[in-house]
Image (cartoon, rainbow, N blue to C red; front, side):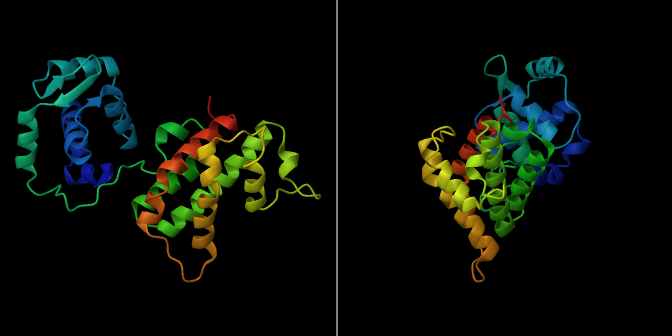
Length: 242
C-alpha cells in the first residue's frame, strides 16, 4: 500500500494536523516497518500528499505534549504502543501483509530531484508514478530517457559535449554516449555506475523495441537502487544538484 492509498483508506485529509501525524506515524511503523520517524519525514509526507506544510516548531511542540507519541530525541519520535493498538482495532485487516507495499518515491526519492529543473522533476515524477501503477515498460523507457538527458547535461556542464557529438554537431546515439562515458576521465563516473549503466539502457531498449518483451515489476525493482545512485551522481556532475 502506498502513501496515497493509505490516505484515502483512512480518510486522512479530514483529520486535524496532529491526528494526521498520528496516522502517518502508524504508516511509518506498521506499513513501512520503520520503528521511528523524524519531524522532517512527517513534514515531507505532508508535502507528498499536497497538504499545507506544518510549522515545524509548533508541530514538534504538539507532538511532544501528546501522549500518542514517544519522544526518542529532539526530532525523532515513535507512536505509543497503545495508539498502534487503537489504530489496528480501528482498521482491522485493512493493511494485511498480503498487500504489496510500495514507497511513493521507490525508484527516485523526491528529495534527490525536487530542486532540479522542471522537466527533470516532471520526468522523475513520471518514473515513480509509472512504477507505482504497474506501467513497467513505460517506467523502463522513461528511466532510459532520464539517464540520457543527465549524461548529456553532465558533458555540457563539463564543456566536453563535443566528445559525444557527430560530425554534424548532433548528439550521438545513447550507446555511443555510454561507451564514451565509461572511459571518459573528465566525466569520471564511479565504478558502480560504469558497471551498471548498460543495464539501464538495455531494459529501456527492450521495453521500447522488443516485440515479445514485457517488463515485469522485478525487472525494475532489481535495478532500482543502482539506478537511483547513478541518477543522483549525474545530477551532481551536471551541476543540477549542489
